[in-house]
Length: 337
Ligand SMILES: [Zn+2]
View 1 (cartoon, protein in one colour):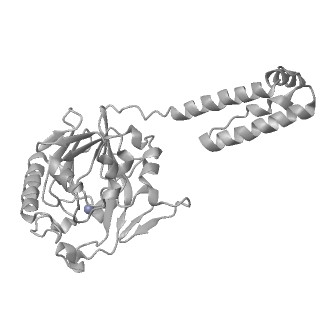
View 2 (cartoon, helix red, strand yellow):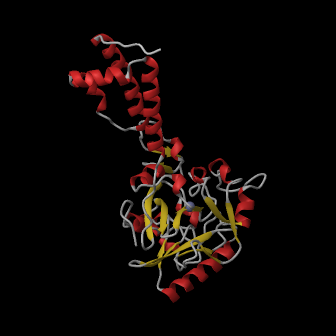
View 3 (cartoon, helix red, strand yellow):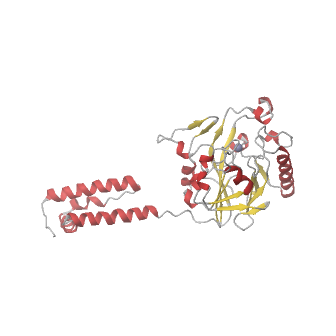
C-alpha cells in the first residue's frame, strides 16, 4: 500500500539509507555518481523524490535496478580494439638473483651478469591475442599491500594482471596461452589463463601431467589447464593466427617439448623470443648447456637450427633471461610493432 510521507526527517533517513547503498556500490564497482544530493537540492526536487521513494518497496526496487545496471555496466569489459598490425608487449615478471652460474657451466667471471630477467610477453595480432610465458611467482602471492614478493631466487615487484590491465586487457580476453616450456619460472600465472586455448606439444604436456612430474616444475601453477581448451601442436612450426605473423617453432632439449616464438613485426622486423634455448648471451656460440638439460644433444641441435634460421632471415634473437638485453627492451605499455 502506498504511504505518502512528507516529513523532512523521513526523506533524510531514506536518503541516508540510499547513500549507504551508494557507498557500497562505489566500493564494489569503483564508479562514482553525484545524483544522490537531489533530494535536498530544491523543494521541487524534494517533491519528486518523495513521490519516487514514497514507499520503502519502491526505494528498494529502484536501488535494485540501480545496482543491477551498475553491475552489468561493470561486467561489460571490452578489450582494446584489434590493431592493424602485430604488437609485441614485454612485461616485467621478475628477476632471478643469486643463481650459481656453475649450473650453466660458467664461473661468475665468465658472465656479464649473474642476474636473470623473467619477462612475460603479450602478442596482439589483428586476429587475437597470445600470452607467451607467464612468470615465476603467481600474482596470488602478492599481499594487499602490493609489496614485492620474494621466493627463493625470485623477486617480483608487480603483478602480471596489473600490467595487462594497464593496457586494457584482462586474462579472460586472451585468446591463446603458450609457454616456452614447463619450468616453474615460466608457468607461475598459467591458471589465470585457463579460459584461453593452450598451445602445447604432446611430449611437454605428458611430462607436465605425469604421475610424478620431475625437474624444475610446479604443477599447482598450471593444474587448471588440464581440462581447458588445448591445441596439441604436432608440427615444427605452428602459425598461431593463420596469418604467418606469429609462429611457435619446436626447439626441444631444455625440456622435451621446448619451443620458441617467432614474431614478424612490421617495423621492428622478425624477433625470435627464444625461451630457454639460452640463458646467458655467453652460451651462444659455445657448446655449454645447463647442467639440468633434459637432452643436451637435442638442445645443441635446436640451437644450430635456430641460429641457421636467424642467419637466413636476419631475425633478432631475444634471450628471455638475458638481464642486460632485457633491461634495454621497451616495457609495456610501450610495445614493438
Ligand atoms: Zn627459465
